[in-house]
Length: 502
Image 1: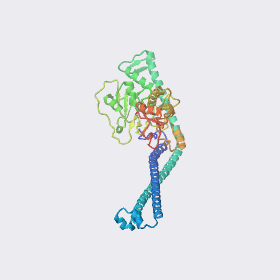
Image 2: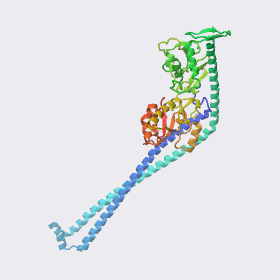
Image 3: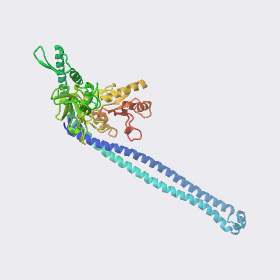
């Protein structure tokens, strides 16, 4: 089994490399969006502070002018009314014998008091000027910071545009590989289903009833036929009936399956592939219906399938994004027969590798990746409709959304409005070319994993009854308006909802 990241096993490795580069650029753009939002707020705050400082300085200017005018008017009136003060005027103005004896100092004290008032107003004006200068410096720093971030954001956007251009050149070959592999797998599935139906038809025509154990029977034609146990025939028939159903990470059927979900469903087992291996009786060589546990050992028990013969099995494969007939790989950890009595749980291989985490034959990524195909190149057969137009999602997400939409319709008397769901890689490229500052870089969008929808009809705006209802109820179905899309986060998108059920 190749130790590869999603996409590398099925498409040009350049696509996978571009996706990783695009993810780096997208993270940079996301970080810059947050910084730009903060810088814009800082600039608004600095501008408001500068406006306040200018108002205070203007008020201080007016106070100084008013005080100076009062002093000038008082002095003018005093001298205009009395002329030069004589002893009678001093006597009339004196408040004490000392004032009369020192009449010449009376006018000085009057002028000194007025001067003090003027000096206080002047000092307050000087403080206001200093505060205004500081506010101007802060506003300039905020403006410069915003300009620098805008420049860096422009550079990152240009790099993203260049990556998008490269993606276009690789898309056709990647799509061709996907289509060819889909067709080959479909043909193999159909041939296996035809062969199994021919086998069960022979049993029916011959009137042979399977028992608890396998036995050989001779047909009227002389052909000898292995008659499998009844429980095995029932299980393999169920597995064949699931061929072509989509893979989902936690699927237990009947619409979609994971690898251990398939074996849980057809044999009534419990637990993960590792837990199933721990309690089932091992056998040295597989017969039809036996379970095949797959490694490599350094990944632990990362997959399980239903054997058809010593070379092939049916499994829900993450890389092939469905229930398929596939070769039994060399990295088999063991075989087990569900028809035998269970045993007490025994130790099974555990993961020792610190690298990629594998599950059901594909890499299990925390970023939302769930198949071996590149983001946006998931086959339509691996997706399920949501019951609204042609919109489709990963099948477990689609099932949860249909349930959410039914409750929404009951609450509002109309169908929930959807503008976007699964978004192909080509659509991501086109959208990014139109609005690179808003759209995710191609190959990084949760739309490309079939795990996101964009809504309308009122749900596209904060503060509406529709948005409030979704915020209160969508979580019960595994859907949420992600944190980064909430108000005040720098990239508000009330219309964007993501599925996080796995």
